Structures are given as structure tokens and as C-alpha cells.
Amino acid sequence: MITLNTERGLERIASWDDIATISGFTPNIDPKTVKLKEIIGSYAFDAYIPCGLSTCHQPHGKGFLVAAVDGRVTNIGRFCGKTHFSVEFTQMSRVYLAAVRAQQNREFLGALKNQLPTISAEVAALKSGQNGASWIYSRINQLTGQTVSLPAPITNAVRQAIRRGDGILMKERAATKQEREDRAAAVDVAGLEHLRRNVSFGVEVRMGQLDGFAAIAPGSELRPILLAIEPFLSTLPDTDIDNLPDKQLRELSKVGGELDANLERLRTLVAAGRRLLVRQNISQLAPFATNRSETQSLEKFLRDLPQQEF
Image (cartoon, one colour):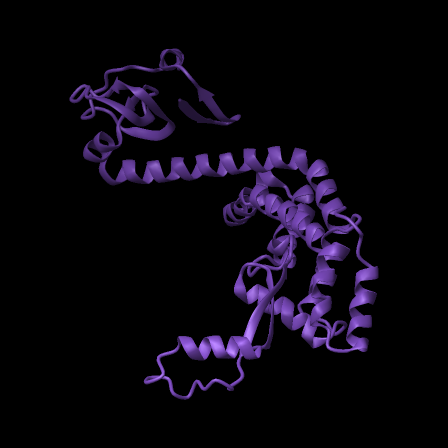
């Protein structure tokens, strides 16, 4: 593939044969008698192309198309460029590559700009639609105790499942007499004399597992993802891409390059949140309530949830 940086933008040429049609192209230039003007293109091929310098002609797969002050154009590899044209070539290659990257960023952002209506509509639906990110975010904050609405035993159970990293709901109860006896029989009496037959201890019991746990797993917060998406979607439509300073162009392109991944992350977390915030799923927390008042608080929360996934 050959990339030419022209006044009309980047032109991509698939065949080396087309290079011969460039005005002034010659496959044989004496580096001792030529002065470079600028780099006008670059190429990368599986098949090797002979160097255009008369003192080399070594085949290579990657190189640059250079224009001389006298109007001639030829192709040279990176090493030949540095060897014969030293710092001048290095500087030209930097200028060329920076210009190509900038033009590629402009093309990328321009194409993305055309897709914005569709993308913005999807983000709006994922955020503000029925059981969307805003609705999910508010209720996850209640479940995890970020906002005061559910009793501590309920939110502590959820937090414990988050710390465990698997969404499993565990509740501790006192060991039965038989469990205490079994434990005492199993210990090394000589080394663990303090574990007497009647000493009580807690036993963890699995009460259930939260479906859609990914919505509350560490690092799954919805707000940072929306903050990475929404400012970009609101900024790009009114941005003059062609006249954007290089630094802003790079920064905006970087955010744009992360858009697909952020969108997929948003879709995934909203889907997980909708699985999580289903009445039957969250009702697994009922055994953690310690009194009628706590049970009523959970029931009120449950009434606001759909009976099945949206």
C-alpha cells in the first residue's frame, strides 16, 4: 500500500505500477547530485522494491517517496535516507509522518462525525430510556449503601458479595451443637486446646447468587463511562476538524478511538444492570433483614423493580 500526502488529502494507491505515472518519477537518482525538497509519500509491500538511489538499488519492503528540488521523484528506504541525507531526511520524515497522522485523524473524525446521529440516539436510549443507565445507577447506589434508603444488613450483604468478587450471597449463623462436636473431633487437641467442644463459632451459609453481578463488580461504574462518551458526542458536531490545532486533534482522536470500546462497555453494563435489578433476583436479600422495618424497606425497593428483565 502506498500513501501519498497531497493537497487534496491522503491518497492511497494499491499498485506500485501506478507510481510510474507520477510526474518526474525516476527509479535512478544519484544522491551526490540531488537535493531533497520533501517527502511526499510512504509505502509498505510484501514484495521488495529496489531503492531508487543509483548507489544502492537494494530491494526493501518499506520506504518513502521523495521529491527533489529539481522536480524529480524517487523512492528510498529509511536507512538510505539517513545515510545519504542525514539530519535533513530525519527531519523531513518526522514532518511527513506527523502530517499523515494528522490527516488520518481528520479523516477518522470526519467519518465519525457522520455517524454521530445514530451513536447519540443509542447513547440517549441506553442512558435515559426505560430501565436505562440513569435508572440503574440510582438503584445500584441504594443497593450498595451509597445513598441511604436500604437498611445496613441488606447493603452489607451486597457489599460482601462485591468483596467476594462472585456475587454469591453468604450469611453467617451460629454453629449447631453437632457442628461444634464435629469440629472438636477433627482438631489436633494437643495443638488447639482452646477449641473446646462447647465454644460457639460461625458457619457461612450460601443464600443465593446475584444475576447481573457484573453491574456492581469493582470497576464497573456507569458514570465514568458516560463521562468518557457524552462530552465527546457534544463537542464533535461543532468542531472545525480541518483547522483544529494538532494537540487538540490528537486528543479528540484518542477519545474517538476509544468510543467503540466505551459504547460496548456501556451496552454490557446496562444489560447486566437490567438482569441484576429484577424483583426475583433482588428478593434473595430478604433473609438478611433483621426486623419487620428492614423487611418493609426492602419490599418498597422491590416494588420499584420489574418482575422480569427489560
